[in-house]
Structures are given as structure tokens and as C-alpha cells.
Length: 435
Image (cartoon, rainbow, N blue to C red; front, side, top):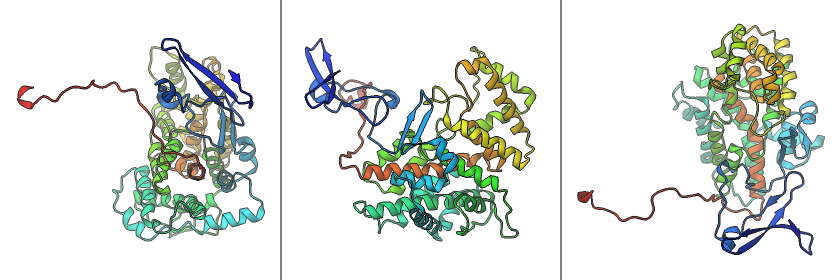
């Protein structure tokens, strides 16, 4: 690494076979590893880079979220997730992600008012919703419904107008819970409920989900408290698959509702947002607390391809800071609600076994946020097929924050990844009669 007269660092790469070199500038963020700007690599050397899964490639500059997987650090706009989880609320965190700073009382009141008064969905949505089969997966319905918002707000969305961009973000944060609950109620044949705007964000959503016209819904306050915490922990997670999808689609100038619908589609994958759903399926397969040790032994057997879902994390090599926070809430929820569910007993037994077993401890395969979030959703009577939908509600705040950031970037360009072509070389067409 060298440093020029202006104090800017760079790295020189040399192709000894061709006898040529290229000087690549070093881009250094506020936190994190230094990054090589390879924008001129192909022009000066004729080489592209090959990085399957983009595990070593920065796709953008962003000021929204920072992760240090080795140290177990997660920051939203510089604020540690531990502090936000303990002292903040999801709606305040959403404001922070969108605006870069925590709101004062007046700013938060205005933001809360805007979100609250954009929760209604157009009545025409009911006809659209009823076009889905009753047994359609809620994520399929949510993806289609959110994408259709582009048809409802196409005539008053000028992407060159910052205020209209901001209002699109507000609408998404406000309407996704309403639409998500409507998708669930359609799947079980219940009438769609209108949002009760005298309730806070999470309590309102739980009423949208579970309240019936024939009787009032009585909620234990711990339910909304736990849901608010889950939404905070899931609000953003840097350049993951779904967020990168939102930004890639957004780079084309696409409608923000279409961008978020694309993010929902990416989140649906079992390797991404479906992980907590996989945890519950695993617990169902184990079935009984007496069989937990057998499952643990199978997971440790290198000759058995059996895996325990919800342990370890691709990014966090030490521990998932979100899991540390949510573990305490999980035990509080189970204690407060007095839930008597055999699967939750299996989960607690599995957690205990993994935290004490040297195999898991040495490999740092600790229970992650997906493990605990699945348990809480189960305790709150959220159906398993709705788990990823819950994730999408929370992650909408992060998606729109990244979309707004991208739209404000004067250096933004349409995303266009390269490839290593492995198909047939150039060849001539052969008439069918001669094949």
C-alpha cells in the first residue's frame, strides 16, 4: 500500500506476465475494513474480478447500518443495537433509519402521526386480495399486494421530488402491516379489519391480525412489547440479499413499491428470511424434549447430514448481538404468557443443550436471532407461514431507508454485475436436416 502527496492511499496490482500494473485507490469508510476501488481495473488491465455471492465486494457506500461480524457489533446509524433495543421503539428506529438522526419529541410526534394516518389500504385491495386462493402462501400474497401499490400511487410519484420519495417511504412503513394482516385473515376466511389508529404501531398490528367483530381483543402488554423488540432487531442488516435486491431494482429508477416487492420476494427464500420458519419445522421434527439429545448428537456426527436450524450465523463469527438481546425477551414472554406448548419446551431444552455442549461452544454455534424469534412468534400464536411476513414488516423500514439513500446519491449508477462465461464458444448454426 502506498500514499500519494494528497494523503490518499492506494494499492498497486501487477500482472507480471503482461508486464503492466494498475494503481487502485483505497476507499476507507468510517468503520470497517479498507476497500479497493476496482472501477478502472478492466479498462487498464483487461481483467474483471470474480466474487461468487459478493462476499468480498462492496456494492455501494452507505451510512445506514454497520456490522462487525467478528466482534458481534450491529449499529443503526452509529447507535448500538443493544441501546436501541433497550431504550427505543420500532417507530423511532424507523425514523432514525430514514433520517439519520434520532427525532426530538416534536419530530417523532409528526412522524407517528404521518405513519398512523397512512395505515388504511384502498378498498379496491379487497377485490385484489380475494383473487388469491385461500391457501396461497402469505408471502406470495404480500409480494403481489405491495407490488400493486405502484398502480395506486403512480400519478403522484415523481422520483425527482424528495418529498414524494419520503412520502412513498412513509406509506410503505404504514401500509405493509395492514396488508400483511389482511393476507393472513384472507387465508383463514376472516373479514379484513380496518386499522385502529388510537393504538401504537405493534398493538395496532396485533389487533389487525386477531381481533374479530364479535368480541374485543384482550392483549397481554408483553405481546406488543416483544413484537416491538423483534421489529427493532429485524429492521435492517446492511447489504443482505433482500436489501441488495431493493437497491439493485431501485438503481433502474423503478417505482419504490416495485422495489420493496422485489425485496419481499428475495426475503422469502429459506436461506434468508425463511430461517425462523425452518426453526419451527425442526422443532416439530424433534417433537419431544426427550429427543433433544439425539438431535444434538446427530448434528455433531460428521457422517450425518442432519443440521440444527437457528444456530450460528454467516456474518457473525462470534455471536449474534440480536440473539443476546432477544433471549431475555423470549424467556419473559414465555413466563408472562404462561404458554404450555410442547414445542417451546423442546426449544428451551435445545437452547440449554447447545449452550453447554463443547462442540457448539468451541465452534461458536450459538442460538441466533432466528431461533429465538421463531419461539416468540409461536408463543404469540403467529402461524408459522406468517413468520417471514413478520420479518418483511420490520425490514421494510431498512429497505426504504436504503432506497432513499440510493435515490439521493448523485453518483448512483444502474447495477450491472459481470459474469464469467462458461458456455459454448462461438459456433455456426447447423440446419435441422443435418443435425
